[in-house]
Length: 267
Image 1 (cartoon, rainbow, N blue to C red):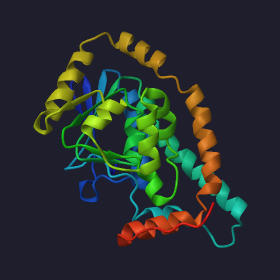
Image 2 (cartoon, one colour; image 1 turned 180 degrees about the vertical axis):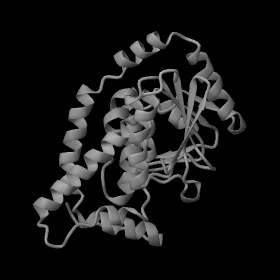
Image 3 (spheres, one colour; image 1 turned 120 degrees about the vertical axis):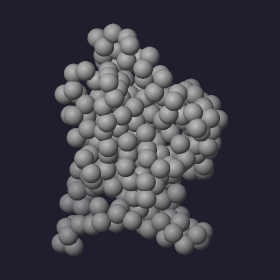
Image 4 (cartoon, one colour; image 1 turned 60 degrees about the vertical axis):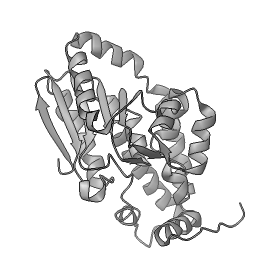
């Protein structure tokens, strides 16, 4: 794995996102590495808990916008229908990568510091337990590039928390929200001091690792119900295979890069 570092510490497997210079932004390689990590962990019988963190100051700044244009480049001879099919296949591949944490057969604990934006939220919503530091900042960022989040956030957070008003506000505005609002939303279960985050998540991991692995496996298999989620994700992929061809995306990205104000045409 090129973008992830895995270290086995007794019965705990520590998985780290390792792109600190890019604020751990998501590249095509990172998506592939998450899928590979599932196989490695699930084939290691004595792993009882997985801890996921990001190296550096930030957990994950979302999709790597510098690499994104290359991901969406298609041959000029393709008509819109064929381009849409390519987009659909790409989204489905990313969705599968972002369900990696739920497909790991043991509990997964995530420790979040600094930025957790866009795709970072897609990723952590598939974990079992989420702690964050006091300095953590979050954003359902996709609206700011002219699209709807399509690889897990809208599908998971919509059923994982009871504060649907706050959830919709954050999805519609894309605004930055802090650790306390993340707790209020139900995105995280605990906020800790920044210098205590690793200690707290590993202490929790050790407690869970001391329990029956069969019991933990059974609990995860029961509480992780992905059947309806799969159909909702597929609807999202089929929707965005058309919606991603909007000019709003180019307008929004340009405004973001130039710090200007985006002006969008009528619906």
